Image 1 (cartoon, rainbow, N blue to C red):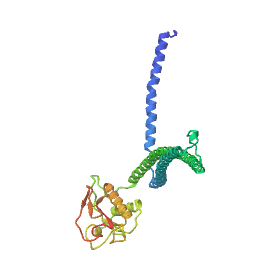
Image 2: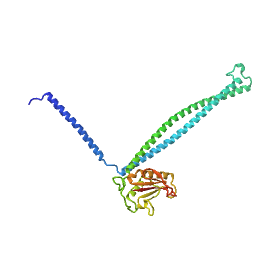
Image 3: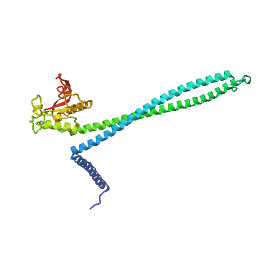
Image 4: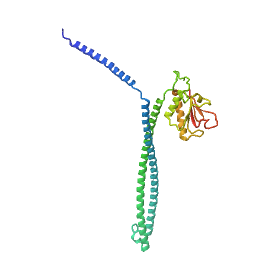
Length: 331
């Protein structure tokens, strides 16, 4: 067999290299596809796991709020210290001005009484009274010079303290803002996870409508209503009872398709905290309307069917006007 020429060997080497390079992308794509498939096949967190994450996030929020509050207290103290420093500065300046005026007055008196340190020898005092006055004036001047020096030192110190506190207040304010922003981000994360936890109600059709349901169970409500009630109880700490089925009344209650979440013992206005809680429950129900099958919400003499709140007519009492409870009706 004839020996291969250098040209033939070169062509063979190029061909082999090209084949290897063309195979490499295919291998990389295959590996990437395998990783994507594995990632998509990873199990979603269970509700228990999500609840545990939420608990950790809530603890983090509590710590952030505590740090934020402590920083606010520090900021208030720094601002109060700045006011004190400014007052000290004003007092020092006033003392300085008064002392300097007094020194000028003493200098004038010494000149008028023949001070030997500033007057010619022939003008020296010749009697004991004049000598005593000069001695008194000299002592007072020395004391006032010391006061002036201290006032100047106090002024400088107060000025430096005020400048330092101004810098600290700006830094603390920026730190407080950062803490608040971080807390708000964590709270938003919690809200997103809470929304993920809300399940879809039973009987939801593909077109978004809801199939009719009959009441079941000892509580005489539909399964959709029961799910909504359970979700409200799970996501909010309710201060009073929840009433759902009620015979002899109008609306969805006798049909097992409505619940009243009491914000007071009934017939009386809720506290400010419970009014705020009612606002959150009402907003939550509207936000999850499509998931749960909420028909409408009534709260504080207003009704919301998903397109915004509108006022209702006065029915004559706190309860009838829905000021003491959040009413949620289901499809």
